[in-house]
Amino acid sequence: MTDFPDDVNADDVTGPTPILAVVGRPNVGKSTLVNRIIGRREAVVEDRPGVTRDRVSYDANWNGRAFTVVDTGGWDPDAEGLAAMISGQAEIAVSLADAVLFVVDATVGITDADAEVVKVLRKSGKPVVLAANKVDDLKTETEAYGLWNLGLGEPFPISALHGRGSGDLLDACLEALPELPEERFDEIGGPRRIAIVGKPNVGKSSLLNRLAGEERVVVDNAAGTTVDPVDELIELGGKTWRFIDTAGIRKRVKTASGHEYYASLRTSTAIDRAEVAVLVLDGGQSISEQDMRIIQTIRDAGRAMVIAFNKWDLVDEERRYYLEREIERDLVQVRWAPRINITARTGWHVDRIVPALEKALEGWETRIGTGALNTFLGRLVAEHPHPVRGGKQAKILFGTQASTAPPTFILFTSGKLDASYERFIERRLREEFGFVGTPIVLQQRVREKRKR
Image (cartoon, rainbow, N blue to C red; front, side, top):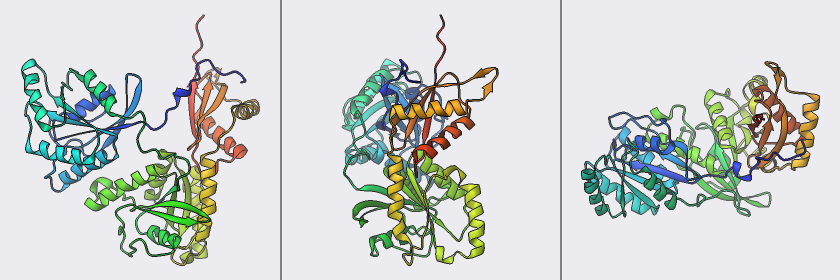
């Protein structure tokens, strides 16, 4: 376990990829085109408008460059009800994207709705690539050039169904996309970004007001008062922090009313923007499935986490007993997250948030030297080798920490490690090196035996 494997490559682990949002009117073939771009049938395709409702992200690769494709529902600026929500999804996708792929049905030509979408795209200031879809013959290709009148530059005639022209279109998309997203959240020296998340009415806004020392956010007993994330720069412990107050994540996003629907989307965006999330739980209520889903969202985003049990002044001895049992049962997967008990309304123990945040960020950015890591892995494997499966025993040949924020490790092995052994490695990593407040990502690279 001392030599580098000959296939270790720094490029194996990439940073955040640029985002391409695919938008257009209903039933112009967006999902078919997305399937063509990603090279597999994942986006749901039916020959009727409105099948895609949510914005859905897929990993894509073209000419060695990775990027993320976001498929959206049909964009109709005059839509009402559910259709308006779907159009709202497309607007959100454009606001988050680095470039936009605007799909138009070449057999129909320019509609009033297309012209309205163009206005919104121009206003966004994002680079736009125009795809003239359903071009299956030379006659339609000639008609497609009428789309120059949209004022978005050259239309690329394509057939998403048959693949015609998709290579030229993807080349144009790569030109429009930056090498990395314009907005990076790992810049050095800026205020650390904290997302305050949790179910509606657990006291997130009260906590932000207490930290800010003034009433900056509307607080009401009615659940769901906050809809937009509100960024606040706040001085705490001699440092400036950027707090993102978010609306509560609703249980069923698709059935929520309009403003709640967007609030849940913005919450997920806030978690993505943050470095560490403070999950606010109501100490007087049982830990719910909804709380667990928020925890999973934070873990999937790879963010550091602090758990704050609020309204502690209302928690009696009996409730504390049951809460301890709930923590042991429900929070077993996030034992690493610092937990604090607070009362935002009175300010009791709110000062404990800053040390917890600092500890979580320190864990999130911890890096272990390759030598120290492999010494640790060698000792671990010697003391607790992987169990034998089918007469074979997987071995860890070498390990390297590919990145921080969150700490990500690549283990080069002679065979697939059991999930239970992976959990064992993670537990021992935490015992040895700390990693308080952060998820740990373990990736395996199984080395195939070379045939002689």
